[in-house]
Length: 312
Image: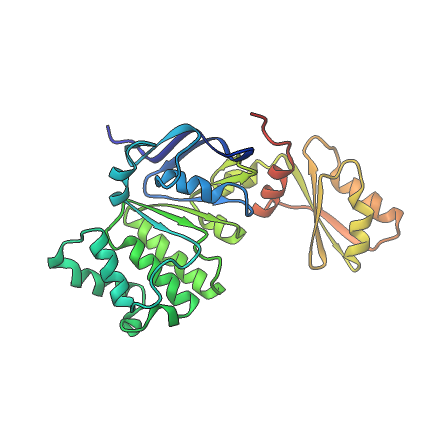
């Protein structure tokens, strides 16, 4: 039976000796959507992606990817997926065309349509001018586009992207995401890991991972609406002094400085959060204004990673 989910994982775990890189992960990734993994380095994002594409065998748990059970059937899965790592993994001493031709050989792309498919990708990913250029001499953004072209050459149903924009400039990142939206619009399911908040906001759904544990899961808006925190924004002429006045309050979970503004997180169980902040500032004779505001994804990330980790 054809599942509505491209990926379903239950209790997926990976241990490296004493290190629990991923712990009891449950996951449902709808088909045709961009699903994000948000988390810092070491949170388990890459390990999860490698298990889902069959490169790593889980210590515990299982997953169904494109109606294929893993571990055990990874060989059947590989022709259906595309995989792109954060490090450029193509051949620097081959031209752009030769790299695409090589990938076509690996996936046994029909010879009759191979040239047309490569020409299509060169045009779609703005690489026509680099057709005969050695991949090793290309810019970061050009390499990224080539890597994506290679990952989708065989029309995969699922695209797994492991921090694909970590080494490119902001404009290249925006262009890259426009390509992802086009792919998702045509029916490709995309699982992308990132530590950029603005990229996480672009995903249809996302999971936040912390020390191998999934601590939040939902649409960006759902997560922002359900932080469990009051968000108080403080604007001060001397934000460092304001932060010092607020930081040690028993009611405060976190204070983050953004320019001249502070983001103060306080549990929703606390009454009159603005008044508490204002009293602390007044006690130090600090000129500042405070107001309640809505949560950003960065606030969500701070809130969920402050919670005690789930014990297994």
